[in-house]
Amino acid sequence: MITKKTIALAGSALALALVAGTAAMAHHSGALYDAEKLVTFNAVVKNFEWTNPHIRIYVIGDAGTPYSGQTLMVESTSTAHLTRGGWTRNSLKPGDHIEFSVNPSKTGSLIANLRTLKNLETGQSLSRPTL
Image (cartoon, rainbow, N blue to C red; front, side):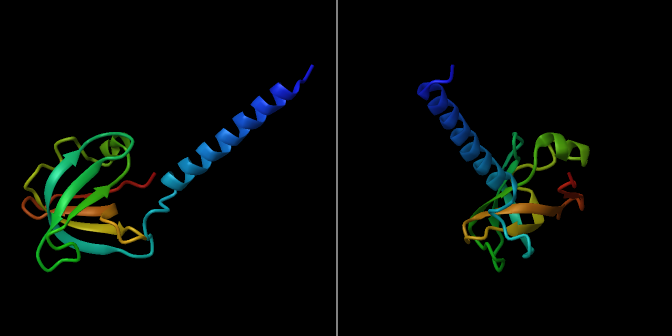
């Protein structure tokens, strides 16, 4: 027999699933970033976090660049995807001088989505693999 309590619990579960699903889609859709805009700049790596679900590269923009003197968080996809593209946890280290191409934040905040990078000291290029 279906009771009011059963209907209420089912309704609550459905509402929670919809809210969680919408938040996950917004997060993974790239909605934070302007996919129509590509910004290329040089920066020094401050910190490289080889973590899931997304790697993060904290950089300080070179003088005369769009992020001059500012700390920007550049994120990319998971370590598994990047490993398939040739990345390792040792691909970047603090102090590396890098040329980045990113999709910037739509809101102007200091976050960006990585497209490609080139280590200016070694010449090594890495990009975000297509999923």
